[in-house]
Image 1: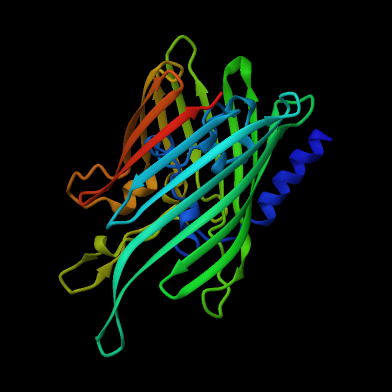
Image 2 (image 1 turned 90 degrees about the vertical axis):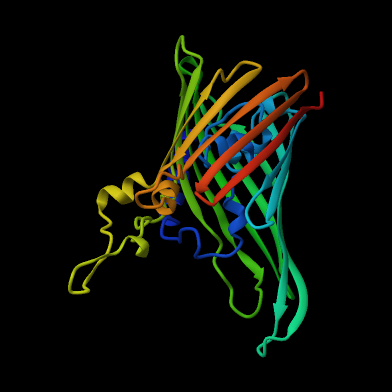
Length: 339
């Protein structure tokens, strides 16, 4: 039975691996970084199998007994008056074998000035989206594999237009305790719009990610490695700002090769002192760095850093993520032990 479940899960990834990357679907907020810890480690970590219930929002397979009665609340000061946040909670059921999880993700796009076709003001308007999720995970009997599922109800309102949708996330993680090794995969946002904004039904931002992490022996460090957007091959694109012109005015575009499409999927991160009351987190997102860096100018795009502090039953987290010379984001979070 366990072997059949693993094979079925891998087949699901294969069948669904022809979907779009970011920017070609609606409800894009579903793939935003959901906690300071995730942001500090580069943006997409799917292998944290511990106390933090916010991890269950991204990979439901990581929902585990250590999250029992843990509440996570996170807030992000994003760009141009946009802000978003998450809240999540997990509850242990059935003699430490099954864990239920619930969470909410919201984004507020702020206020905009509206105008009609003649340029006349129509007043201000706003926009926001929210997703309510219910997750469940359990260990596959007699194995080190854990499977989990999130079911999400999604609501979006942009000016006078609104939409309702639904999606599921399916995750798998292998936890080998003797080596403190975690290997995980997740297929996110498998779903549809129930009601479109206008007349056209849009795709959801489906994504497949793979990750691996491990703590080093005799060294207080845990490393993380993630490959994102495995559902499509052409993830890199030629940046028009890097076009080169010869003396005759001919344009030579940036060349995207096989190596670019491989390495731009990679995200790396490290946690120093991961088991202590104070830890430091560093991350590097290669795709973000390549797509947002400025030629011949050091902008530190793609870098992120943060820390976590444990104060009795409260953990405080902060992260700073650099996107470009003109754009960075701050992430704040609290994990509260309600036991």
